[in-house]
Length: 402
Image 1 (cartoon, rainbow, N blue to C red):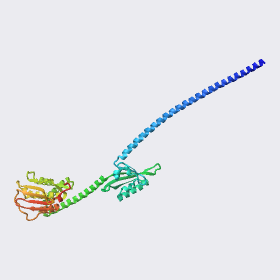
Image 2: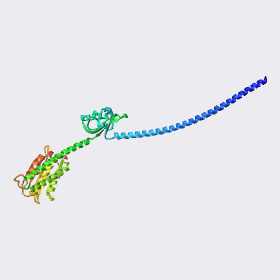
Image 3: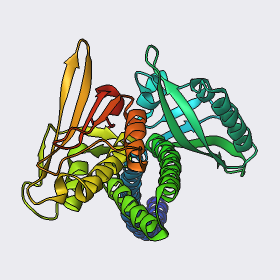
Image 4: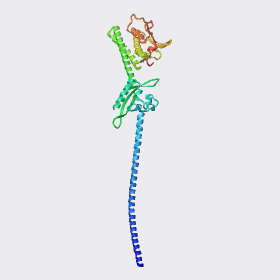
């Protein structure tokens, strides 16, 4: 009995030891498997970590590049904004209905508004009061909506109490979207008011020049006709006409220095002195204030001084060594009106007698001076020498420079 029981226990122990060994083997196998799986998981985790780190590095590099690009873009946009908004041109962005979306910094002053916010949403065409300009603006907006650019000149009036008129060269261009169709309108206006003023001034100067040339030709024609009519011979006529044309040319030289609108009286007298004074001192004694004459009075007086000088050299004070001519002028006030008093007096020449008939020089002096100066001319012949006096309203003989 005892042996059977012992044998059963031993068999049971052997079975337990076998189960324990099997369990240990399984545990060792599981441990090996877990270790392998853990190593594999660690390797995968390390690989994922490397990939993650590489992804972070690449992301950081891309972010840096994006930030650099954004910085460059912002700098470019700021530069473009400065260029666009600081230009002297007035730049406007409009919607397709012609309402203002954005305006350059000079826009409010151009359009007569307080600030840019007061302009946003306003109809651009409403600022143009001139009907012709409004019509051009309307046509340009219509063309821009159809995808066409246009350019024109328009007049703009700003101000309420005092209206200021300005002229603008306007370019209207459509701004297309991604679909190639206009989504905005760009309008750029350049101030050409000064150019318009220069054009008007040039036109006026050309008209004035044409008027001056016609007057000069008429004067030349009258001088030539009267010279030939009173000449005793063809040679004498040629000599007299040539001298008178020289005097007229000298008067024109003085007139050109005054831009064809005025002439200096002192320079006119100096021309006569130079032509008839023969370089001798004290042949002419001149005194008078500086005075600027108009174009027509200046030309007439220049020719008259030549006639007086020629007669004095042939028959009067300048025909003898001891003779001289006194030329003087001044301004005299009579009531509220100022008058020019001009005097030519010959002294020290041969005895003078009044002519028996009026020659060309006499008629030219009396009629032309009276007409051009709208004054009173007196030509007398005392025995001491020829005396010419002229009295004319100052306002009628002054040039533009005065």
